[in-house]
Length: 250
Image (cartoon, rainbow, N blue to C red; front, side, top):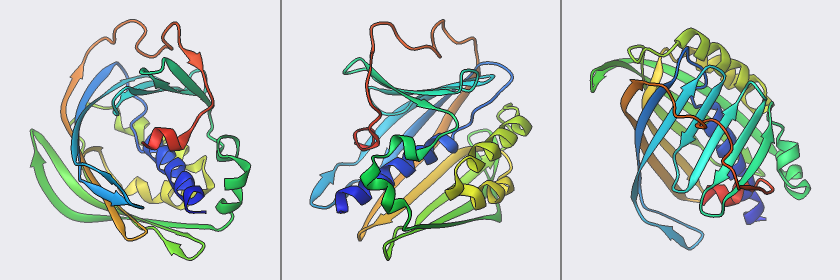
C-alpha cells in the first residue's frame, strides 16, 4: 500500500511539475536554472544533497526541459503530445494532451485517487526584493493533500518577476487552462492567477510520512536565441516504452 501511495504522489508531482512550468513565448528563449536539493531519508532509503543545472527552451507551442540527469521532457502543444526521454537507455514515453491520469496510472492505483482530497491557496505576501537584476514579488502556495487519513502538505515560496521578457499574458492564460485540465487542480487554476510574473526562485517543501523533502530552484539566466535544429523533436534511434512515473521520480 505504501508503494502505491508513493507511486501516486510521484505521478501527481510529475504532472504538477509540467503544469507549473512555463509553456509559451513569442520566440525561442533559453532559461538556465540551478536546483539545490537537501538530503532526505524516506522509508529507510537516503538521498544525499545535490545540485543540478537545468535548461528550459521555450518557443510558441513548444517546450523542452532538461532538469534531471539523463532525463528530458518535451512538450508539444501543436501535436498535443508530451515526450519523456531517458538518454541513458535511449527510450522515450509518450503522453497525450490533455493529461488523463487514468491512462497513465495503473488500475490498482486508480482506486487510491478516489480517496484523494486536495485543496490549494495562493497568497500574495506583498514582499518584494531584487533577485539578480529582476524585481520580484513573493507568493506562498499551499497545497493540502489528504489520502486515506494521511496528510501530505506541499508548500511553495515563489518569487515571481515581470522583467524576464516572457509573454506573461499568454503564459498566464495557457497556465490556467492546463491546470483546469486536471480536476485535482481546479481550485488552484483560479488561485494561481494571483501570481504575477515568471517564477524566478521557487522553494519547495513536501512533508510525507514524517519526512520532509526540500529543494530550491533558481533562474540564473534568460537568453533570446534560436534553438538548434531538433531541439523539440524526438532523437533518432530511441525506442518507445511505457510511461513510469515511479522511475521518473528517482
